Length: 245
Image 1 (cartoon, rainbow, N blue to C red):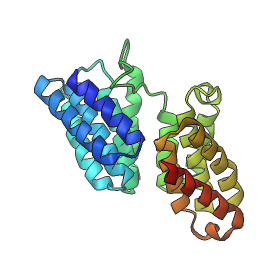
Image 2 (image 1 turned 90 degrees about the vertical axis):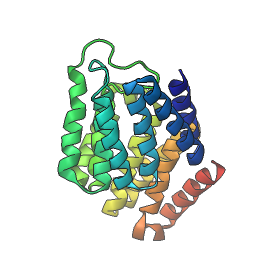
Image 3 (image 1 turned 180 degrees about the horizontal axis):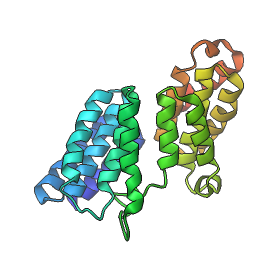
Image 4 (image 1 turned 180 degrees about the vertical axis):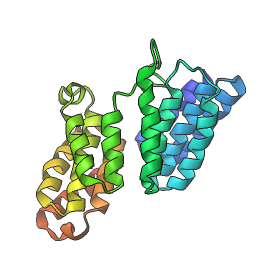
């Protein structure tokens, strides 16, 4: 129960950009999970801690934490999706390190979640069911500079029923931010504006720190496009959103 509650506290702090509080909560969650011999809870706390490093682009440190999470998850319940979630997040760390081969291998391991039957997640501290893998794969390809592949994957994800129906505005906002980022890498101002403004609207609607961080990453990647008045205005709106948070 303590590990579960500390993970929840960490998630709330992380989504509100209170990284120090989130780190403390995740450390306590990991310690409680370890003491209780609850390997899946312990591994999940480590995964969430790795997100803190990735949010600061410390991908090598994140990869090290995730390697520890992988070892812990291997001792857990084989009917749960813990080890598949670890692999999915490892793919993000490898993408940040520019390692396409390791990224795709991790994504392939994560895809095996579809082989599980029954209740593979509990909807609380473990929510990974593979439903986000398409958008996650697209996001990883974008980070690796595989723009055409990323765009195709993300647009398909955007058209999926779960996203198009608005089931998760937070997820939709993240996909839109990634599509805007692809436009920035291509130097396509119209693509940046089209998807960036949609993501900005959803960030304001959901008050999600996660989407706001993705937009901040977009803003930092404008490059020469920042000379465009329309892009500069979008950047100012993103800056104002993050200042409020």
